[in-house]
Length: 521
Ligand SMILES: Cc1cc2nc3c(=O)[nH]c(=O)nc-3n(C[C@H](O)[C@H](O)[C@H](O)COP(=O)(O)O)c2cc1C
Ligand code: SF4
Image (cartoon, rainbow, N blue to C red; front, side, top):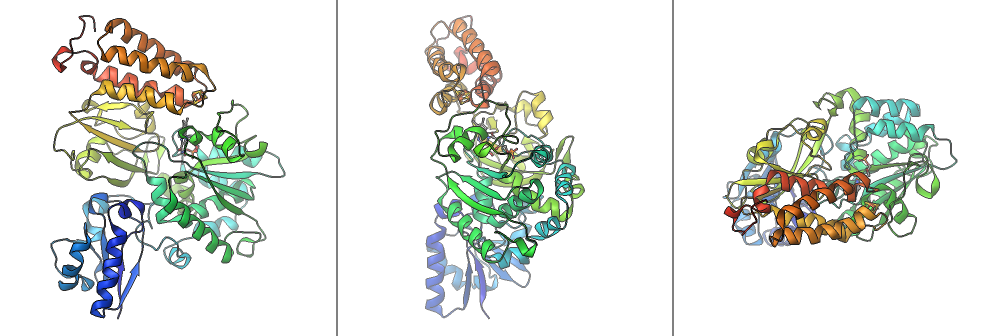
């Protein structure tokens, strides 16, 4: 009987040698005459264990990791194809605490199935949501999503049902569904993992969105830096067309939905929804004034649903199990789960899908195992490059949109980047201004000019020049950027800058940290 072995084709695993390990396992199996069914899955999201090799046994899938090519011969020698003992054996994959304690709704199949096999997707509950949606009136689909409490996972946390309802009620010949797969935030990779590890769930979610609002054309705006996601999305779209899940007559219903992937060109601001639409129309990625909202006048001037990958990929489980099932997870007005991405100076980086309400402290220590350097964790940036830095005193605040608003922080796309006590927070503040200066689309003055002046002011503060005056100037500048930028790139750059200054003032002038600061700082 052939043994089924899973080795990820996810790019995080590939970057750690998964391709070479897969080759070595295949060659060794041939050499030994072992009958092997090698499946390339997505990643389970435990990056410190990648490449993670799994073998199917009667007890379940047994994991070995991190496996390097030099380990392959000994794995065969110790009979890993039957789950044999080996120093790299981790036991049943599903029993690994990091994974076992998660609540995987959106990521239910990632790492489990062959991402580009439609049969595997169907065997694991795929397309149940679409089948249900096909029998529902459009308004009932929108209501199910509204009832789920789903809020956009791209950053702004706008209620998805309300957005869809606006598009549903907009009269037009042609409407569109656009998936924002630009994923530009530092330390984030959940969109990538879905697109590489379970592309059908995104395709299903977009098809349901099309039925819900009356859109017949969808586009996935994918960042060019994701070639593996591009390949898997195109393979899955092709299979979905062949099997009648996309096209002019979805599963014989007479309903149409077409879908294409379009590549971005590498600008952070093209993740902002209106400049994304400009880019998708073939123009330079420049932010548009709002109103009109994209839901009323979006792509090519037509009503458009634009949602993040995770928002859309959460729709199939909502349609399958019901909005009430989904909203039972979470706290307050933050319903369902958030795929949290743990990165930076952390021992166990990876993807943790949990209901809202978990704290940073639990994530950093119970999941993350503390810093990779072994030094104390000093600051954590949550929500990408425009997110605030949180000090240890805020590690017990639950991950909840409103709780984070109260402490002047954001959850954004759920990215968490960890820094130990060697970090210089003034340098991080300068970096935030520099990032904004480089990525600014240039349309409005507070961002275009303000960020450049911000870098200069930070340089003066760091050079201990007239520090008190320059810190006051920095605050003034941040105030202008916050209140008068056209979009959140300029409008949120003050979050990392001011949180660094407010929580870590010693890095902006405390003599004990080695700077000959002036007395007023
Ligand atoms: C500078 C900037 C960059 C953004 N980048 C992304 C991104 O990469 N992916 C994303 O989904 N949303 C991004 N957003 C948020 C989008 O503008 C928009 O809110 C989102 O696509 C809406 O989808 P959602 O409601 O499902 O979150 C960005 C916003 C700004 C201001
Ligand atoms: S804030 Fe920056 S990125 Fe946004 S519109 Fe203004 S210049 Fe462009």
